[in-house]
Image (cartoon, rainbow, N blue to C red):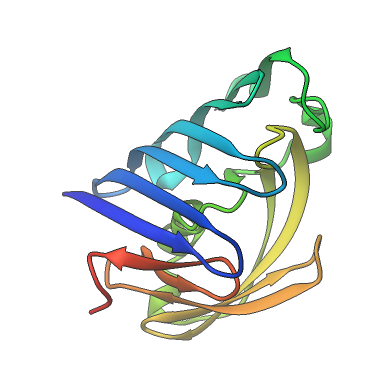
Length: 199
């Protein structure tokens, strides 16, 4: 199944378009995010998971006025996480890349300001069917810096369309509204989906 999704930012101007392919236990996507905070930027990404929606690779290219950044974040069962980062030009941002030891146990990437990457843990753990809360460690990519950090998160099933997200690394709690495929319709303070409209 292929889906074209469009979100708009909440609280600050931002837009994102992603073409998503969902299979039985895999997800792949190509997307573009455009924002103006903390500086104006355009970010293109390609995401691939392996079985059980476990991240295999997240490849990003970001650019703004006078700067370009790239990041390839890859994970394999044999070698764990690997980071390859480059940047050109000057920008008031922290350096791209990070220390894989900080999030070695993570199964998922979490792309900053992007509502798509919440889908992987929701589908892998069957959270729309209910059950107990789950705790995760994520490889969180800050945007537009493309620096990678450890992020501790909790997902709490509420009902067949709602999962409460607890971002322990940033003291945030919000109820994610999702569609039947586990794709975000509304993420409080972050984004809401414009296309396709909410069911």
